[in-house]
Image (cartoon, rainbow, N blue to C red):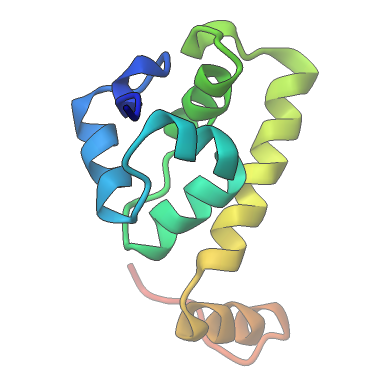
Length: 110
C-alpha cells in the first residue's frame, strides 16, 4: 500500500494536495522523483515559488527538520531554487527579461 505524502517530514496536507494535483500522490513516488523534479512539476502547475517551501521539501526528503538548512548548504539550495524558477518561467517573462538585459525596454513606472 502506498505511503501518504504526509509521512515525509515537512509535508502537510496542503502541500500533499498540491503534489497530488501534479501526479505525485504518494511518498514513494516523491522520493523516486526527487526534490528538484517534483518542485519543477509544482511550478509548472502554476503554484507560486517559495524558497522556504522548496528547501523544506529537500530537508524532508532527507528526513531533516525544515529549519536545519544553513550556511553553504542554504546558499547552494538557493541557487538550485533560482534555476528551477528560471526554467519554469513563461516564455513571455523570459522574453521580457532578455529585453531588460539588453536595455530595450523602458523601466516600469510602479
